[in-house]
Length: 148
Image (cartoon, rainbow, N blue to C red; front, top):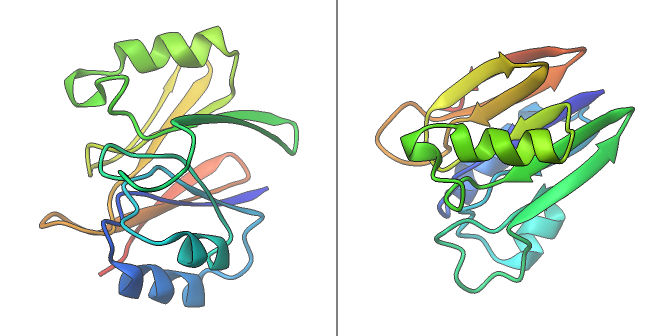
């Protein structure tokens, strides 16, 4: 199983396009929201996405549970779980839903931690002043890749 994980694009379709030209052999493309893209671009990018706090006009769910390749994945943006102030609320959701992997965004900071058997992954952001990054999850390992 190979997951391409992007987030917080905020309209930077140029960076997304560059990543999709480089990363071509993934099984799923998961996005943590704050897309700033239209639905056509989202569909063409073959991504499964959730709604972020800046996705005012997108008809996307706030969270998704994805069962894939024997893993149960929770995908959220993170603003509803207040991830900028810690992972407490997000952990409750992950444990309540008995997921293996919890993918979130909102902080614009790449992050990985295994907490009580659940892998928490934030790919970082494709926009903003900080380092632009995305993540690849493959064979139980997470790699953060600079998108600049």
